[in-house]
Amino acid sequence: MRRFTALFVSLFIYFLASSQDFTYTDNGLPCARNAYTFTPSVSSSYDSLVWDWGDGNRLTTTTTQSVDHAFISAGIYNVTLNVYLNGSINSSVSHNITVYDKPNLTFSYTAPSLVCAPDDSVLLTVDTINIEPPDLQFTIDWGDNTQETYGKDQIGQAKTHKYQKTSCGNVITIGTTQITDKFLITIAATNRCTSVPVFLFKPVDIKSAPDVGFSVENVSYDSVSSTFYVCDSTEVLLNNDAYGQDNCLEVDNVIWQVYNESNQIVNECLNNCPANYTLPYLGYGKYRIVLTQENTCGSSSVERYVEFRRPPQVSFELETPVYCYPASVTFLNTSSDDVVRFWWDFIGDSSQVFVDTVKTNHQWLYTESGTYTVHLWGTDNYCMNDYDTILDLTKRCKDIYVPTAFLPESDNPDLKVFKPMAKDLVEYRIDIYDMYGKHIWSSTSLNDDGEPAEAWDGTCPDGTPCPAGTYIWKIKAKISYGDLGVIDWDGQVYNRKGKRSTAGTVVLIRQ
Image 1 (cartoon, one colour):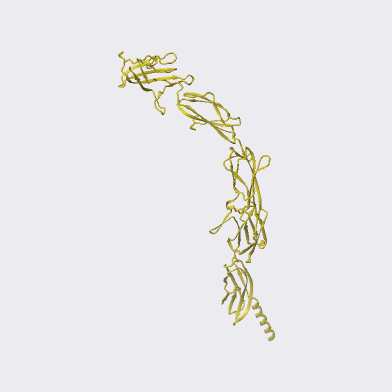
Image 2 (cartoon, rainbow, N blue to C red):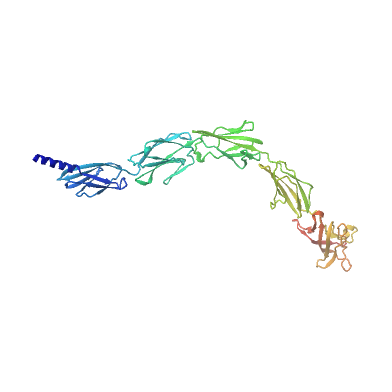
């Protein structure tokens, strides 16, 4: 009976000891620096409970209440609960707990000595030094607007990428630092322990065979034939637009070659050529220009056509020479037939410009004294030319000549009287005054040819001879110009500037 009782007691104590345990919860966030809650389940007598968190920290309690513990970093921790009774361990139980943290990634990038887009690949492998949760995601942004997203299963798997363009000219900013001519590889990772992506960076230098292209300064361009047109026998500057600022493409050599229409090289530069090239005038005709640029990644070429065109002939003639005004002038357009658009300026001050889309003759009426530069421009849709001439129309075509002196006692009948000379007058009045303003003589008489019909013989109104001296004349008249109409006479020129006046003086001379 005693043996049975002793055996029963031993089994009961063993059962109590082996039934000790604990449970835990991560409170929905199994991550470092977040509290785990541990709850013991102790069914026997005890003096104290000692928690060993497996991270170098311990906690002793005298109750079976739940306790919290936060692990500082990620890892697998062996948490042990020791139940003490009478100063010794009565029972002990352990559980392994996996603790995660925000992503802690690394990557390895093999930096080749030369990467040439689009042929060469780069290699990138993403690893982690953490125990990552299953929801880990990381995105690789290759810096050229290409992104790829992966899950945890791709950790440690090599990724390759082919750049389709050079990093030349690209600018990236890291903090306050600017880096030019490189792409920035960015790796952004998230998991359940963070909603803010964790970033890694790597600048990479991607080369390529040189871009190539050039433009031509100050010339027209025909997009249909892809040809630049030069409308003069002059040299042309070819701008190498793709040489790159500071030559970040690292062009080693620039080659310029010029071919004529027979595909023969007529001008070239093969070594150490300037980025921009001056094309000399090679005669009228069409030329093929080839630009080649070379570097360690290869070479690229482009061709453009430049045509030296003979400007069209632009000219005009006067149907009849004209030397006076008013005049209706006929301009005969004698330009070549390839001109498709004309601009006329008949006055010479660009105030009135007339546009023709066909070759047309023009008439222009000049009614005022002046020197006029008549200008004609024309284009064949590619090149423009011009022609001008000067019309000196400072003289009246019809005028009144007023003598400046006469001698009533002269034997010469032309000198005996004061009589203006003119033709085609349709209205006429002349008045003579002495120097004190006294009216002496007047006439309105015209003959059939419109000539003044009467003359002043120097007699005063009382019939006596007027004394020698200076007298004032005033004339008001209208002159017929046929189809041009009737124009008021604006007087004789009285100074070097061509000013006119309808009044003047005449000297009466007595012998």
